[in-house]
Image (cartoon, rainbow, N blue to C red; front, side):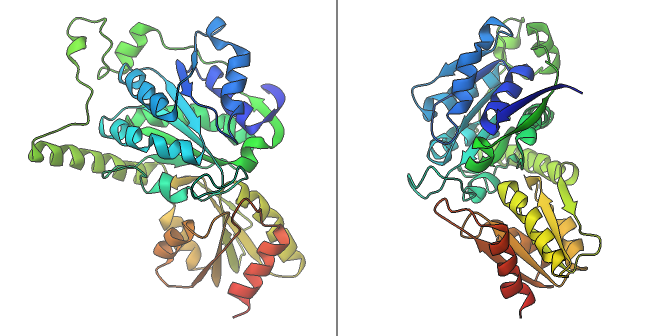
Length: 360
């Protein structure tokens, strides 16, 4: 067993970055994720692993620092919350267009606008549908525990470099601020300059003859070349959809009804299905772990088994649209959510299932 610590979700993300051999973190504080950069500043990883930690002057600056360092083949990451992520969208589109690997963490707060510093899941569309401009996609991982906040950092970098693409970790203020026991993974050495050159022949290091001529760009003025570049990107996204779908099923084998939830809502739903089964209602929980690629086929299969599905979200209803696409009107699909930083209770979720799905 690895080292055990009691940590906040945000602290676990930061510690995982140090242990994963990350070269640099560029970010800017915003509630409810400020502990990420605070933890990194206190740990001073530049003295132990050589990791650079820099508070940029803004989120705009931090995402462009990510763009530059990623272009050199470095492991780089940033984190923010809704308003800050919005400022990063242009840079993320450039990074996706230039096919560069990085990890971006969003510890979601309520919106729109400045909204509230309380937890929410209302950035689902922003993460899964691109958020920025152009036809691009990012793998989106949705942790439901502090342990997964840690585990998804090395996984995120593995996927980012596998596909040369940004990977998004979509958490929320509840997971970011809560404290749980975490089993920490062993330290991964940072890549040497030679390893960067060998692993990432596309990178512009400036230290290898001819390598300085590698061009990192998302600009293609010729429409034909731009279209071919987009076709290449779409082929990559199709490969993601085929190979990278992740999900968890809880008490689904005999389920007659289904709750679909991710992140903190999935934690709440686990208690809801226990309350339901105490009343003799056979309810299962389907938890998407990747929100992109979304587990359409797996939910479609569940639609052949159950009588109805409730999408449980801390939002006005965003993931529910993907669920409806998956089941294609085979069965009833409804949404229940709270907004403004209010968190639904397990009893409220069960009541919504009974009224919206079972009661009709």
